[in-house]
Image (cartoon, rainbow, N blue to C red; front, side, top):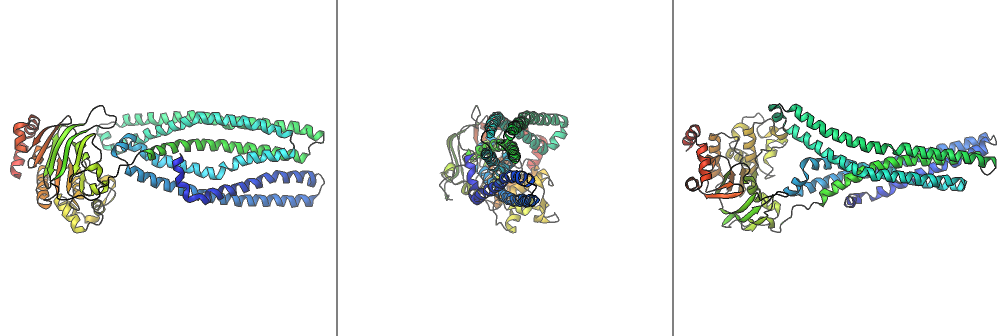
Length: 580
Protein backbone atom coordinates (compact mmCIF):
# COMPACT_ATOMS: atom_id res chain seq x y z
CA UNK A 1 0.00 0.00 0.00
CA UNK A 2 2.81 2.42 0.88
CA UNK A 3 4.28 2.40 -2.61
CA UNK A 4 0.98 3.78 -3.96
CA UNK A 5 1.28 6.94 -1.86
CA UNK A 6 3.84 8.28 -4.33
CA UNK A 7 0.97 8.97 -6.74
CA UNK A 8 -0.41 11.53 -4.28
CA UNK A 9 2.71 13.72 -4.38
CA UNK A 10 1.15 16.10 -6.93
CA UNK A 11 -1.95 16.58 -4.79
CA UNK A 12 -0.48 17.66 -1.45
CA UNK A 13 -2.51 20.87 -1.47
CA UNK A 14 -5.78 18.97 -1.95
CA UNK A 15 -4.78 16.44 0.73
CA UNK A 16 -4.29 19.26 3.25
CA UNK A 17 -7.03 21.72 2.28
CA UNK A 18 -9.73 19.10 1.70
CA UNK A 19 -9.72 17.72 5.27
CA UNK A 20 -9.21 21.27 6.60
CA UNK A 21 -12.48 22.49 5.04
CA UNK A 22 -14.19 19.34 6.28
CA UNK A 23 -12.95 20.11 9.77
CA UNK A 24 -14.41 23.61 9.51
CA UNK A 25 -17.74 22.08 8.55
CA UNK A 26 -17.52 19.74 11.55
CA UNK A 27 -16.68 22.65 13.87
CA UNK A 28 -19.80 24.49 12.72
CA UNK A 29 -21.84 21.33 13.29
CA UNK A 30 -20.55 21.14 16.86
CA UNK A 31 -21.55 24.75 17.51
CA UNK A 32 -25.19 24.19 16.49
CA UNK A 33 -26.24 22.16 19.62
CA UNK A 34 -24.77 24.93 21.86
CA UNK A 35 -26.84 27.52 19.98
CA UNK A 36 -29.91 25.27 20.31
CA UNK A 37 -29.34 25.04 24.06
CA UNK A 38 -29.27 28.82 24.35
CA UNK A 39 -32.44 29.15 22.26
CA UNK A 40 -34.25 26.76 24.61
CA UNK A 41 -32.91 28.15 27.89
CA UNK A 42 -32.80 31.88 27.16
CA UNK A 43 -35.13 32.38 24.21
CA UNK A 44 -38.01 29.96 24.75
CA UNK A 45 -37.55 29.84 28.55
CA UNK A 46 -37.71 33.62 28.84
CA UNK A 47 -40.21 34.02 25.96
CA UNK A 48 -37.76 36.26 24.11
CA UNK A 49 -38.86 35.90 20.46
CA UNK A 50 -36.22 38.38 19.24
CA UNK A 51 -33.46 36.25 20.72
CA UNK A 52 -34.98 33.11 19.18
CA UNK A 53 -35.09 34.73 15.73
CA UNK A 54 -31.54 36.06 16.06
CA UNK A 55 -30.12 32.71 17.13
CA UNK A 56 -32.16 30.87 14.49
CA UNK A 57 -30.52 33.12 11.89
CA UNK A 58 -27.15 32.14 13.33
CA UNK A 59 -28.05 28.46 12.84
CA UNK A 60 -28.95 29.17 9.21
CA UNK A 61 -25.66 31.03 8.74
CA UNK A 62 -23.73 28.14 10.28
CA UNK A 63 -25.56 25.75 7.92
CA UNK A 64 -24.75 27.83 4.82
CA UNK A 65 -21.10 28.15 5.78
CA UNK A 66 -20.96 24.44 6.50
CA UNK A 67 -22.43 23.72 3.05
CA UNK A 68 -19.84 25.92 1.34
CA UNK A 69 -17.03 24.22 3.22
CA UNK A 70 -18.45 20.78 2.35
CA UNK A 71 -18.72 21.62 -1.36
CA UNK A 72 -15.15 22.96 -1.38
CA UNK A 73 -13.92 19.79 0.29
CA UNK A 74 -15.76 17.58 -2.19
CA UNK A 75 -14.26 19.48 -5.12
CA UNK A 76 -10.74 19.10 -3.71
CA UNK A 77 -11.37 15.43 -2.88
CA UNK A 78 -12.60 14.68 -6.41
CA UNK A 79 -9.65 16.52 -7.92
CA UNK A 80 -7.20 14.57 -5.78
CA UNK A 81 -8.88 11.15 -6.09
CA UNK A 82 -9.42 11.22 -9.84
CA UNK A 83 -5.97 12.68 -10.47
CA UNK A 84 -4.49 9.97 -8.26
CA UNK A 85 -6.51 7.30 -10.10
CA UNK A 86 -5.39 8.58 -13.50
CA UNK A 87 -1.71 8.56 -12.56
CA UNK A 88 -2.03 5.16 -10.87
CA UNK A 89 -3.64 3.56 -13.94
CA UNK A 90 -1.08 5.09 -16.28
CA UNK A 91 1.84 3.90 -14.12
CA UNK A 92 0.30 0.45 -13.64
CA UNK A 93 -0.33 0.05 -17.38
CA UNK A 94 3.21 1.17 -18.14
CA UNK A 95 4.61 -1.27 -15.56
CA UNK A 96 2.54 -4.15 -16.93
CA UNK A 97 3.95 -3.45 -20.38
CA UNK A 98 7.47 -3.59 -18.94
CA UNK A 99 6.99 -7.02 -17.36
CA UNK A 100 8.57 -10.10 -18.78
CA UNK A 101 6.50 -12.86 -20.36
CA UNK A 102 7.17 -14.99 -17.25
CA UNK A 103 5.65 -12.40 -14.91
CA UNK A 104 2.59 -11.94 -17.12
CA UNK A 105 2.13 -15.71 -17.31
CA UNK A 106 2.35 -15.93 -13.52
CA UNK A 107 -0.39 -13.35 -12.82
CA UNK A 108 -2.64 -14.04 -15.81
CA UNK A 109 -4.13 -11.62 -18.32
CA UNK A 110 -7.62 -11.56 -16.77
CA UNK A 111 -6.25 -10.78 -13.33
CA UNK A 112 -4.11 -7.97 -14.75
CA UNK A 113 -7.16 -6.44 -16.47
CA UNK A 114 -9.20 -6.71 -13.27
CA UNK A 115 -6.47 -5.04 -11.22
CA UNK A 116 -6.05 -2.30 -13.80
CA UNK A 117 -9.78 -1.47 -13.83
CA UNK A 118 -11.74 -2.70 -10.82
CA UNK A 119 -8.99 -2.50 -8.20
CA UNK A 120 -7.80 0.96 -9.24
CA UNK A 121 -11.40 2.24 -9.07
CA UNK A 122 -11.74 0.82 -5.55
CA UNK A 123 -8.50 2.47 -4.39
CA UNK A 124 -9.52 5.74 -6.04
CA UNK A 125 -12.84 5.65 -4.18
CA UNK A 126 -10.95 4.98 -0.95
CA UNK A 127 -8.83 8.12 -1.45
CA UNK A 128 -11.96 10.16 -2.20
CA UNK A 129 -13.73 8.96 0.94
CA UNK A 130 -10.61 9.46 3.04
CA UNK A 131 -10.42 13.15 2.21
CA UNK A 132 -14.15 13.71 2.53
CA UNK A 133 -15.03 11.72 5.63
CA UNK A 134 -12.08 9.99 7.30
CA UNK A 135 -11.07 13.15 9.17
CA UNK A 136 -14.58 14.45 9.76
CA UNK A 137 -16.02 11.35 11.43
CA UNK A 138 -13.31 10.91 14.13
CA UNK A 139 -13.24 14.67 14.73
CA UNK A 140 -17.01 14.74 15.27
CA UNK A 141 -16.77 11.85 17.72
CA UNK A 142 -13.95 13.46 19.67
CA UNK A 143 -15.36 16.97 19.37
CA UNK A 144 -18.84 15.93 20.48
CA UNK A 145 -17.34 14.09 23.46
CA UNK A 146 -15.29 17.16 24.45
CA UNK A 147 -18.30 19.45 24.11
CA UNK A 148 -20.37 17.04 26.19
CA UNK A 149 -17.71 17.09 28.93
CA UNK A 150 -17.87 20.89 29.05
CA UNK A 151 -21.63 20.69 29.57
CA UNK A 152 -21.68 18.01 32.29
CA UNK A 153 -18.72 15.85 33.32
CA UNK A 154 -20.72 13.22 35.19
CA UNK A 155 -23.20 12.65 32.37
CA UNK A 156 -20.39 12.49 29.80
CA UNK A 157 -19.28 9.24 31.43
CA UNK A 158 -21.86 7.59 29.15
CA UNK A 159 -19.76 8.65 26.11
CA UNK A 160 -16.67 6.93 27.44
CA UNK A 161 -18.56 3.68 27.87
CA UNK A 162 -20.29 3.70 24.49
CA UNK A 163 -17.32 4.74 22.28
CA UNK A 164 -14.94 1.86 23.29
CA UNK A 165 -17.74 -0.69 22.84
CA UNK A 166 -18.37 0.44 19.27
CA UNK A 167 -14.62 0.61 18.57
CA UNK A 168 -14.20 -3.02 19.62
CA UNK A 169 -17.12 -4.05 17.39
CA UNK A 170 -15.59 -2.20 14.42
CA UNK A 171 -12.17 -3.78 15.00
CA UNK A 172 -13.57 -7.33 15.18
CA UNK A 173 -15.63 -6.90 12.02
CA UNK A 174 -12.71 -5.36 10.12
CA UNK A 175 -10.40 -8.19 11.18
CA UNK A 176 -12.89 -10.71 9.82
CA UNK A 177 -13.78 -8.98 6.54
CA UNK A 178 -10.34 -7.90 5.20
CA UNK A 179 -9.34 -11.43 4.05
CA UNK A 180 -12.85 -12.00 2.69
CA UNK A 181 -12.65 -8.94 0.44
CA UNK A 182 -9.32 -10.20 -0.89
CA UNK A 183 -10.91 -13.57 -1.69
CA UNK A 184 -13.81 -11.77 -3.38
CA UNK A 185 -11.39 -10.00 -5.73
CA UNK A 186 -9.82 -13.35 -6.63
CA UNK A 187 -13.28 -14.69 -7.49
CA UNK A 188 -13.74 -11.67 -9.76
CA UNK A 189 -10.46 -12.58 -11.49
CA UNK A 190 -11.81 -16.02 -12.35
CA UNK A 191 -15.11 -14.62 -13.63
CA UNK A 192 -13.19 -12.12 -15.78
CA UNK A 193 -11.04 -14.91 -17.20
CA UNK A 194 -14.10 -17.01 -18.11
CA UNK A 195 -15.81 -13.99 -19.68
CA UNK A 196 -12.74 -13.17 -21.77
CA UNK A 197 -12.32 -16.77 -22.92
CA UNK A 198 -15.99 -17.17 -23.78
CA UNK A 199 -16.18 -13.96 -25.80
CA UNK A 200 -12.94 -14.64 -27.69
CA UNK A 201 -13.90 -18.25 -28.36
CA UNK A 202 -17.59 -17.67 -29.10
CA UNK A 203 -17.36 -19.34 -32.52
CA UNK A 204 -15.59 -22.40 -31.15
CA UNK A 205 -18.12 -22.72 -28.34
CA UNK A 206 -21.00 -22.65 -30.80
CA UNK A 207 -19.23 -25.02 -33.18
CA UNK A 208 -19.09 -27.61 -30.40
CA UNK A 209 -22.52 -26.67 -28.99
CA UNK A 210 -20.91 -25.90 -25.65
CA UNK A 211 -23.08 -22.90 -24.82
CA UNK A 212 -24.83 -24.49 -21.87
CA UNK A 213 -21.61 -25.89 -20.38
CA UNK A 214 -20.00 -22.47 -20.58
CA UNK A 215 -23.08 -20.84 -19.05
CA UNK A 216 -22.99 -23.37 -16.20
CA UNK A 217 -19.29 -22.77 -15.58
CA UNK A 218 -19.80 -19.01 -15.57
CA UNK A 219 -22.79 -19.40 -13.26
CA UNK A 220 -20.62 -21.36 -10.83
CA UNK A 221 -18.04 -18.56 -10.92
CA UNK A 222 -20.57 -15.79 -10.26
CA UNK A 223 -22.28 -17.94 -7.61
CA UNK A 224 -18.94 -18.11 -5.85
CA UNK A 225 -18.69 -14.31 -6.04
CA UNK A 226 -22.25 -14.05 -4.76
CA UNK A 227 -21.69 -16.42 -1.84
CA UNK A 228 -18.46 -14.63 -0.89
CA UNK A 229 -20.14 -11.20 -1.17
CA UNK A 230 -23.16 -12.37 0.84
CA UNK A 231 -20.90 -13.80 3.55
CA UNK A 232 -18.92 -10.59 3.90
CA UNK A 233 -22.14 -8.58 3.59
CA UNK A 234 -23.72 -10.46 6.48
CA UNK A 235 -20.77 -9.72 8.71
CA UNK A 236 -20.63 -6.07 7.62
CA UNK A 237 -24.40 -5.77 8.10
CA UNK A 238 -23.94 -6.51 11.79
CA UNK A 239 -22.04 -3.24 12.19
CA UNK A 240 -24.82 -0.68 11.72
CA UNK A 241 -27.53 -2.40 13.83
CA UNK A 242 -25.13 -3.09 16.70
CA UNK A 243 -23.74 0.45 16.54
CA UNK A 244 -27.27 1.91 16.54
CA UNK A 245 -28.29 -0.34 19.40
CA UNK A 246 -25.35 0.68 21.57
CA UNK A 247 -25.77 4.36 20.71
CA UNK A 248 -29.52 4.37 21.30
CA UNK A 249 -29.00 2.70 24.65
CA UNK A 250 -26.50 5.45 25.33
CA UNK A 251 -29.09 8.10 24.43
CA UNK A 252 -31.60 6.41 26.75
CA UNK A 253 -29.01 6.54 29.52
CA UNK A 254 -28.32 10.23 28.79
CA UNK A 255 -32.04 11.12 28.97
CA UNK A 256 -32.58 8.96 32.06
CA UNK A 257 -29.70 10.37 34.09
CA UNK A 258 -30.04 13.81 32.52
CA UNK A 259 -33.66 14.02 33.64
CA UNK A 260 -32.55 13.36 37.20
CA UNK A 261 -29.89 16.05 36.88
CA UNK A 262 -32.54 18.52 35.68
CA UNK A 263 -34.71 17.72 38.70
CA UNK A 264 -31.80 18.46 41.05
CA UNK A 265 -30.92 21.67 39.18
CA UNK A 266 -27.54 20.43 37.93
CA UNK A 267 -28.57 20.59 34.27
CA UNK A 268 -30.93 22.73 32.17
CA UNK A 269 -33.35 21.48 29.53
CA UNK A 270 -31.35 23.17 26.78
CA UNK A 271 -28.12 21.53 27.95
CA UNK A 272 -29.81 18.12 27.99
CA UNK A 273 -31.05 18.75 24.43
CA UNK A 274 -27.51 19.73 23.37
CA UNK A 275 -26.15 16.68 25.14
CA UNK A 276 -28.62 14.46 23.27
CA UNK A 277 -27.68 16.14 19.98
CA UNK A 278 -24.00 15.43 20.62
CA UNK A 279 -24.86 11.82 21.34
CA UNK A 280 -26.78 11.67 18.03
CA UNK A 281 -23.84 13.26 16.20
CA UNK A 282 -21.57 10.61 17.63
CA UNK A 283 -24.05 7.95 16.51
CA UNK A 284 -24.18 9.24 12.94
CA UNK A 285 -20.41 9.80 12.82
CA UNK A 286 -19.75 6.24 13.99
CA UNK A 287 -22.19 4.86 11.41
CA UNK A 288 -20.32 6.81 8.73
CA UNK A 289 -17.05 5.56 10.19
CA UNK A 290 -18.35 1.98 10.04
CA UNK A 291 -19.22 2.38 6.34
CA UNK A 292 -15.85 4.01 5.76
CA UNK A 293 -14.15 0.99 7.25
CA UNK A 294 -15.93 -1.21 4.71
CA UNK A 295 -14.74 1.09 1.90
CA UNK A 296 -11.19 1.22 3.30
CA UNK A 297 -11.14 -2.54 3.76
CA UNK A 298 -11.95 -3.00 0.09
CA UNK A 299 -9.45 -0.29 -0.85
CA UNK A 300 -6.65 -1.90 1.18
CA UNK A 301 -7.37 -5.30 -0.35
CA UNK A 302 -7.28 -3.79 -3.85
CA UNK A 303 -4.19 -1.72 -3.03
CA UNK A 304 -2.34 -4.85 -1.96
CA UNK A 305 -3.27 -6.56 -5.23
CA UNK A 306 -2.00 -3.55 -7.19
CA UNK A 307 1.18 -3.49 -5.09
CA UNK A 308 1.78 -7.12 -6.03
CA UNK A 309 2.04 -6.02 -9.67
CA UNK A 310 4.40 -3.13 -8.87
CA UNK A 311 6.55 -5.53 -6.81
CA UNK A 312 7.21 -7.63 -9.90
CA UNK A 313 10.57 -6.75 -11.39
CA UNK A 314 10.31 -5.25 -14.89
CA UNK A 315 12.13 -6.82 -17.77
CA UNK A 316 15.81 -6.21 -17.21
CA UNK A 317 17.35 -3.65 -19.53
CA UNK A 318 20.69 -4.49 -21.02
CA UNK A 319 23.46 -1.94 -21.40
CA UNK A 320 24.24 -2.61 -25.06
CA UNK A 321 22.50 -0.06 -27.28
CA UNK A 322 24.40 -0.52 -30.57
CA UNK A 323 24.69 -3.81 -32.46
CA UNK A 324 27.34 -4.41 -35.09
CA UNK A 325 26.06 -5.53 -38.49
CA UNK A 326 29.19 -7.35 -39.59
CA UNK A 327 29.10 -10.21 -37.05
CA UNK A 328 29.69 -13.56 -38.72
CA UNK A 329 26.71 -15.23 -37.03
CA UNK A 330 23.61 -13.09 -36.49
CA UNK A 331 21.96 -15.74 -34.27
CA UNK A 332 23.85 -18.16 -32.06
CA UNK A 333 22.64 -20.67 -29.46
CA UNK A 334 25.18 -22.35 -27.18
CA UNK A 335 24.01 -25.26 -25.00
CA UNK A 336 20.66 -23.56 -24.38
CA UNK A 337 18.12 -25.14 -22.04
CA UNK A 338 14.91 -23.53 -20.88
CA UNK A 339 12.13 -24.33 -18.39
CA UNK A 340 8.97 -22.33 -17.80
CA UNK A 341 8.40 -21.06 -14.27
CA UNK A 342 6.71 -23.73 -12.21
CA UNK A 343 7.19 -26.39 -14.88
CA UNK A 344 8.52 -29.75 -13.81
CA UNK A 345 10.83 -30.32 -16.78
CA UNK A 346 12.81 -28.45 -19.40
CA UNK A 347 10.96 -27.34 -22.53
CA UNK A 348 14.27 -27.03 -24.38
CA UNK A 349 17.38 -29.13 -23.75
CA UNK A 350 20.95 -28.44 -24.90
CA UNK A 351 20.18 -26.58 -28.13
CA UNK A 352 23.20 -25.35 -30.08
CA UNK A 353 23.29 -23.83 -33.58
CA UNK A 354 24.28 -20.67 -35.43
CA UNK A 355 22.74 -18.75 -38.34
CA UNK A 356 24.61 -16.48 -40.73
CA UNK A 357 23.22 -13.17 -41.92
CA UNK A 358 20.76 -13.51 -44.79
CA UNK A 359 20.25 -17.25 -44.25
CA UNK A 360 16.94 -18.95 -43.66
CA UNK A 361 16.51 -21.15 -40.59
CA UNK A 362 13.61 -23.59 -40.59
CA UNK A 363 12.20 -25.14 -37.42
CA UNK A 364 9.87 -28.13 -37.63
CA UNK A 365 8.50 -30.73 -35.25
CA UNK A 366 5.38 -32.06 -33.60
CA UNK A 367 2.97 -30.07 -31.46
CA UNK A 368 4.46 -29.08 -28.11
CA UNK A 369 8.03 -29.94 -29.03
CA UNK A 370 9.39 -26.43 -28.20
CA UNK A 371 9.45 -24.68 -31.58
CA UNK A 372 7.77 -21.45 -30.41
CA UNK A 373 9.70 -21.49 -27.14
CA UNK A 374 12.96 -21.61 -29.08
CA UNK A 375 11.91 -18.68 -31.27
CA UNK A 376 10.83 -16.64 -28.21
CA UNK A 377 14.35 -16.80 -26.82
CA UNK A 378 15.76 -14.85 -29.77
CA UNK A 379 14.02 -11.51 -28.99
CA UNK A 380 14.50 -12.32 -25.26
CA UNK A 381 10.79 -12.68 -24.50
CA UNK A 382 12.05 -15.39 -22.15
CA UNK A 383 15.58 -15.82 -20.85
CA UNK A 384 17.44 -19.08 -21.21
CA UNK A 385 17.66 -21.11 -18.01
CA UNK A 386 21.06 -22.43 -19.10
CA UNK A 387 23.45 -21.55 -21.91
CA UNK A 388 23.56 -18.36 -23.96
CA UNK A 389 21.57 -16.85 -26.83
CA UNK A 390 23.39 -14.20 -28.88
CA UNK A 391 22.35 -11.80 -31.64
CA UNK A 392 25.11 -10.16 -33.69
CA UNK A 393 27.64 -11.66 -31.28
CA UNK A 394 26.07 -10.10 -28.15
CA UNK A 395 24.09 -12.06 -25.55
CA UNK A 396 20.46 -11.00 -25.81
CA UNK A 397 20.04 -10.32 -22.08
CA UNK A 398 22.80 -7.70 -22.35
CA UNK A 399 21.05 -5.84 -25.17
CA UNK A 400 18.54 -3.07 -24.41
CA UNK A 401 15.13 -4.67 -25.30
CA UNK A 402 13.95 -1.84 -27.60
CA UNK A 403 17.23 -1.94 -29.52
CA UNK A 404 17.04 -5.72 -29.89
CA UNK A 405 13.39 -5.88 -30.94
CA UNK A 406 13.67 -3.02 -33.42
CA UNK A 407 16.06 -5.28 -35.30
CA UNK A 408 13.62 -8.21 -35.21
CA UNK A 409 10.28 -8.55 -36.99
CA UNK A 410 8.02 -11.06 -35.24
CA UNK A 411 4.88 -12.70 -36.59
CA UNK A 412 3.18 -14.81 -33.87
CA UNK A 413 1.21 -18.00 -34.39
CA UNK A 414 -2.09 -16.20 -33.94
CA UNK A 415 -2.42 -13.23 -36.28
CA UNK A 416 -3.23 -10.20 -34.11
CA UNK A 417 -4.41 -6.94 -35.64
CA UNK A 418 -5.56 -3.86 -33.75
CA UNK A 419 -8.50 -1.52 -34.19
CA UNK A 420 -7.60 1.21 -36.66
CA UNK A 421 -6.70 1.42 -40.33
CA UNK A 422 -4.44 -0.96 -42.23
CA UNK A 423 -1.89 1.87 -42.48
CA UNK A 424 -1.86 2.35 -38.70
CA UNK A 425 -1.35 -1.38 -38.15
CA UNK A 426 1.48 -1.39 -40.68
CA UNK A 427 3.32 1.41 -38.86
CA UNK A 428 3.86 -0.55 -35.65
CA UNK A 429 7.36 -1.68 -36.59
CA UNK A 430 8.31 1.70 -38.00
CA UNK A 431 6.17 4.66 -36.92
CA UNK A 432 7.29 6.94 -39.78
CA UNK A 433 6.95 4.32 -42.53
CA UNK A 434 5.89 5.84 -45.85
CA UNK A 435 3.10 4.49 -48.04
CA UNK A 436 5.72 3.23 -50.49
CA UNK A 437 7.41 1.19 -47.75
CA UNK A 438 4.04 -0.15 -46.61
CA UNK A 439 2.97 -1.12 -50.12
CA UNK A 440 6.33 -2.81 -50.72
CA UNK A 441 5.90 -4.89 -47.54
CA UNK A 442 2.33 -5.77 -48.52
CA UNK A 443 3.51 -6.90 -51.95
CA UNK A 444 6.20 -9.12 -50.44
CA UNK A 445 3.64 -10.66 -48.07
CA UNK A 446 1.22 -11.24 -50.99
CA UNK A 447 -1.32 -8.92 -49.35
CA UNK A 448 -1.33 -5.95 -51.72
CA UNK A 449 -3.53 -7.80 -54.19
CA UNK A 450 -6.57 -7.77 -51.89
CA UNK A 451 -5.72 -4.53 -50.03
CA UNK A 452 -5.55 -2.58 -53.29
CA UNK A 453 -9.02 -3.82 -54.22
CA UNK A 454 -10.58 -2.49 -51.00
CA UNK A 455 -12.51 0.78 -51.51
CA UNK A 456 -10.40 2.65 -48.95
CA UNK A 457 -7.08 0.89 -49.61
CA UNK A 458 -4.62 1.53 -46.77
CA UNK A 459 -7.30 3.55 -44.97
CA UNK A 460 -9.56 0.50 -44.66
CA UNK A 461 -10.68 0.22 -41.06
CA UNK A 462 -9.70 -2.98 -39.25
CA UNK A 463 -12.27 -4.00 -36.66
CA UNK A 464 -11.29 -5.33 -33.24
CA UNK A 465 -8.96 -8.29 -33.70
CA UNK A 466 -9.33 -8.03 -37.49
CA UNK A 467 -12.74 -9.70 -37.46
CA UNK A 468 -13.65 -8.14 -40.80
CA UNK A 469 -10.79 -10.01 -42.51
CA UNK A 470 -10.33 -13.68 -43.31
CA UNK A 471 -7.68 -15.79 -41.58
CA UNK A 472 -5.37 -15.72 -44.62
CA UNK A 473 -5.77 -11.95 -45.00
CA UNK A 474 -4.94 -11.35 -41.33
CA UNK A 475 -1.86 -13.55 -41.60
CA UNK A 476 -0.56 -11.75 -44.65
CA UNK A 477 -1.10 -8.30 -43.12
CA UNK A 478 0.62 -9.48 -39.92
CA UNK A 479 3.57 -10.69 -42.00
CA UNK A 480 3.69 -7.42 -43.93
CA UNK A 481 3.66 -5.44 -40.67
CA UNK A 482 6.81 -7.26 -39.55
CA UNK A 483 8.50 -6.60 -42.93
CA UNK A 484 8.13 -2.81 -42.78
CA UNK A 485 11.56 -1.30 -42.23
CA UNK A 486 13.34 -4.45 -43.45
CA UNK A 487 14.36 -5.97 -40.10
CA UNK A 488 17.64 -7.83 -39.71
CA UNK A 489 15.81 -10.90 -38.38
CA UNK A 490 12.31 -12.06 -39.31
CA UNK A 491 10.63 -14.66 -37.12
CA UNK A 492 7.64 -16.41 -38.72
CA UNK A 493 6.00 -18.59 -36.09
CA UNK A 494 3.84 -20.90 -38.21
CA UNK A 495 2.45 -17.72 -39.73
CA UNK A 496 1.73 -19.13 -43.20
CA UNK A 497 -0.57 -21.91 -42.01
CA UNK A 498 -3.67 -20.20 -43.44
CA UNK A 499 -2.04 -19.67 -46.86
CA UNK A 500 -2.51 -22.06 -49.74
CA UNK A 501 0.57 -23.70 -51.28
CA UNK A 502 0.68 -21.33 -54.23
CA UNK A 503 0.56 -18.19 -52.07
CA UNK A 504 3.03 -19.69 -49.62
CA UNK A 505 5.50 -20.40 -52.42
CA UNK A 506 5.04 -16.91 -53.91
CA UNK A 507 5.68 -15.35 -50.48
CA UNK A 508 8.87 -17.36 -49.90
CA UNK A 509 10.13 -16.44 -53.36
CA UNK A 510 9.38 -12.73 -52.80
CA UNK A 511 11.02 -12.86 -49.40
CA UNK A 512 14.26 -14.15 -50.93
CA UNK A 513 14.32 -11.53 -53.65
CA UNK A 514 13.00 -8.48 -51.74
CA UNK A 515 14.87 -8.97 -48.45
CA UNK A 516 18.09 -10.77 -49.38
CA UNK A 517 19.96 -9.58 -46.26
CA UNK A 518 17.20 -10.42 -43.77
CA UNK A 519 17.74 -13.56 -41.73
CA UNK A 520 14.51 -15.57 -41.64
CA UNK A 521 13.53 -17.92 -38.82
CA UNK A 522 10.53 -19.86 -40.11
CA UNK A 523 8.54 -22.26 -37.94
CA UNK A 524 6.29 -24.43 -40.04
CA UNK A 525 4.48 -27.73 -40.05
CA UNK A 526 5.08 -28.07 -43.81
CA UNK A 527 8.29 -29.55 -45.13
CA UNK A 528 7.54 -27.91 -48.48
CA UNK A 529 7.79 -24.47 -46.83
CA UNK A 530 11.21 -25.28 -45.40
CA UNK A 531 12.84 -27.31 -48.20
CA UNK A 532 14.79 -24.27 -49.47
CA UNK A 533 16.00 -23.29 -46.00
CA UNK A 534 19.77 -23.04 -45.48
CA UNK A 535 19.38 -24.92 -42.22
CA UNK A 536 16.52 -26.85 -40.66
CA UNK A 537 16.21 -27.79 -36.98
CA UNK A 538 14.02 -30.81 -36.26
CA UNK A 539 12.55 -30.67 -32.76
CA UNK A 540 11.22 -33.55 -30.66
CA UNK A 541 10.41 -33.33 -26.94
CA UNK A 542 12.47 -30.17 -26.55
CA UNK A 543 15.58 -31.56 -28.20
CA UNK A 544 17.12 -30.91 -31.59
CA UNK A 545 17.13 -34.42 -33.08
CA UNK A 546 18.36 -33.19 -36.45
CA UNK A 547 20.05 -30.10 -37.92
CA UNK A 548 20.84 -29.73 -41.61
CA UNK A 549 19.43 -29.12 -45.07
CA UNK A 550 16.27 -30.69 -46.45
CA UNK A 551 17.94 -33.40 -48.53
CA UNK A 552 20.36 -34.36 -45.77
CA UNK A 553 17.63 -34.63 -43.17
CA UNK A 554 15.52 -36.90 -45.36
CA UNK A 555 18.46 -39.29 -45.43
CA UNK A 556 19.73 -38.93 -41.87
CA UNK A 557 16.82 -37.86 -39.63
CA UNK A 558 14.02 -40.38 -39.12
CA UNK A 559 11.68 -37.83 -37.51
CA UNK A 560 12.00 -35.41 -40.44
CA UNK A 561 11.67 -38.22 -42.97
CA UNK A 562 8.43 -39.39 -41.33
CA UNK A 563 7.00 -35.87 -41.44
CA UNK A 564 8.01 -35.47 -45.07
CA UNK A 565 6.53 -38.80 -46.18
CA UNK A 566 3.27 -38.19 -44.30
CA UNK A 567 2.82 -34.87 -46.09
CA UNK A 568 3.80 -35.95 -49.55
CA UNK A 569 0.44 -37.24 -50.68
CA UNK A 570 -0.45 -37.06 -54.36
CA UNK A 571 -2.14 -33.64 -54.22
CA UNK A 572 0.69 -31.93 -52.37
CA UNK A 573 3.26 -33.59 -54.63
CA UNK A 574 1.58 -32.15 -57.70
CA UNK A 575 1.33 -28.68 -56.16
CA UNK A 576 4.98 -28.74 -55.15
CA UNK A 577 5.98 -29.92 -58.65
CA UNK A 578 4.15 -27.03 -60.31
CA UNK A 579 5.72 -24.47 -57.98
CA UNK A 580 9.24 -25.72 -58.57
